[in-house]
Image 1 (cartoon, rainbow, N blue to C red):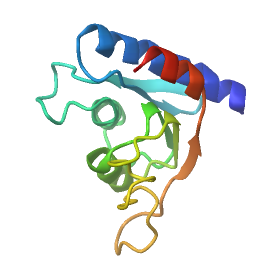
Image 2 (image 1 turned 180 degrees about the vertical axis):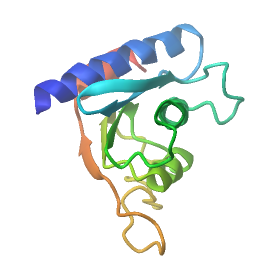
Image 3 (image 1 turned 120 degrees about the horizontal axis):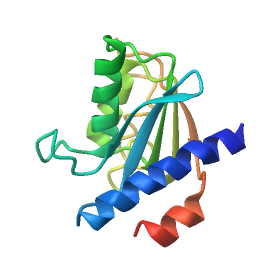
Image 4 (image 1 turned 90 degrees about the vertical axis):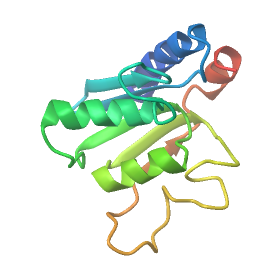
Amino acid sequence: MEDRHEQFMKRCIDLGMKAKSNGVSPVGSVVVKNGNIIAEGYEGEKEIPQPVAHAEMIALIKAIQHLGTKDLGHCILYTTKEPCFMCSYLIRQTGIKEVVFAMRTEDKGGISSRYPILSAVDINKWPAPPNIVEGILKETCEQNLK
C-alpha cells in the first residue's frame, strides 16, 4: 500500500510546488476514491476566497461537488502537511476514512497540537476519526516544500 501512498503524495508535492511558485504556503492535496484521484487542490487557489483557500478545503469541496454528496466516507485525503483545525473539521464532517500526510504542523495541527480535532474520539455527534498515516515522503516534502 505504501507505493500507492507515495504515488498520490507525489501528486500532492507537485500541487504544493505550484502553490509555492505562487508565493503561498506550499501545500497540495488530493482526494482519492477507489484508487483514482477525484479532486485536488493547492493552497491559495483563486476559486475559494482567502483565508479558507487551504489545499485540503479546496480538494474536499471539489470532491463534494464531483460526487454530489458531502459523504466522503469511501475516500482518502492525501496532503503534504498535517491538516489544520479548520481543515480537520471539514474532514470529520465529510467522514473521510483515511488521511495520509507527509509533515506535521505541530502548533495548529489537527493531530499533533493541543487540540487534536482530527483524531478526537470524544466529540459527540461526529463521525469516527479517520485512520491516520503520516510521514509518507516526509523528507522529499521537507526538502522541496519549505
